[in-house]
Length: 486
Image (tube, rainbow, N blue to C red; front, side):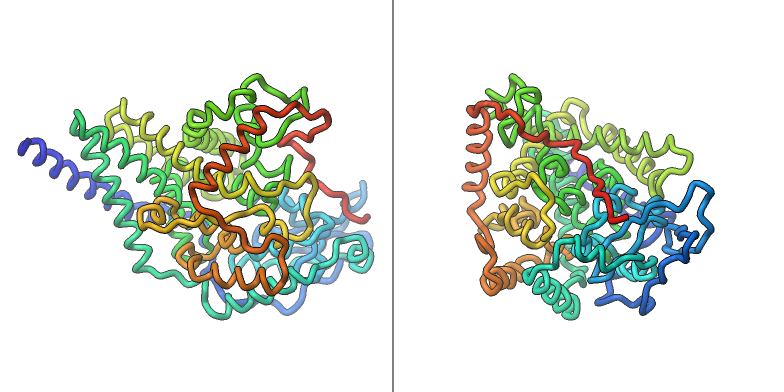
């Protein structure tokens, strides 16, 4: 027994030393990835956008937002692609292909207001750059056909400005260090126990599963972040959590922008394994009838699916003539991740802890949205959408708070995804008051954690026993593009 403890202690020290080296190294490797600026309170860019291009010409823009006027080709000028932000209409047709996150994002907001999404996902640099985009030629016509900004959204914009002025996006570095140390300790102990064999390996599986889930929560916070510290910590996604930020950002940000929008939000597009609504007969599956009985198995596959998708996305990206920035670095870090996993952890333990971590994470990630309202059409009021589709989880003991990783403050996160998660406990009462003052239907929604989990299982059970619904829209593949006013 003494010998076993000595071996475990030595192994733990070695693992922690390796983790320390691995954690520090990517901060240098990641220097090749463009930095997003630290968060600033308001726009600091030029005071006005570019005027519309003269007749017979059009703008072509680079990724950095620099746009030049060029003569239209013989086939004619391209159609405008008009997006409203902060009450001003911009023609983004010349910048569409240069958008770092992909042209589909620009397409989806053609003829729509993207103010809240713009502020939610972009750094100070990106927000300043947007002010240099060309103005639309027909703003009055566009305004007449676009949904007006609601009083609720106006109030939300005032709240956001107030929070920015008060410095809510500043990180507590001491707290960040503590979160990292806890993760590193749990990981090191998990590896040591897993390598010890016998009953300690069971504890190793649990500890590694918890560490894997926590790596996901930490990476989630940093990839959402728009400050310089979060940008330097993005490596945690591929290196520690085994997932690609490029894959994750596109999938997850779409979930944030169009939460519970059927046909667009991939987080609710889990059929044919799990159905959240009765499907059209042509999209049905035999498995739906027993899905409530196999939920644990289905949930357990979460990280296997996510990690496989990460590899697929990176592989396809690297095969392009011009891969997106950061793709090569992510591929290197993913390779290091899997090398360390297979070198440090007994192979028969690896699938078990990944499956257990998937179960834990899926229980948390599905419980706060799926039992809320879903939308068959685009909801132009981003703030209203978030209040109606999101519910907080009430967790009280320290272990549960750590386990949930900030996801218990789901509404706070959805309204302010780039804010450090450490700010959410103090933000919650502010949003409760905001909902009361602005008479938000349903108010600030919150339920006990176990109640949410039970409600989520009941949803799967009800859908399992429901009859197919002819004409029900599919959960994925709906066209994103909305034709702008010509």
